[in-house]
Image (cartoon, rainbow, N blue to C red; front, side, top):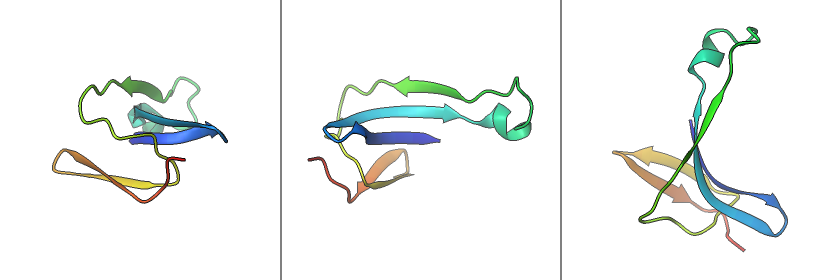
Length: 71
């Protein structure tokens, strides 16, 4: 799963992207050794502005962001 943007307080909006690897967790959710692995994706070109309250999806290796706000 990939997440983009969001906000962690009323005034701090983000444009970071993270990859959540859920494969081990989904195979054995009750196993204490099943961890979700989170990796920050470093994007250097075409980075959208900060965004929160949006929806996003991918299509043909492109990220599409719909709605939301940045201020």
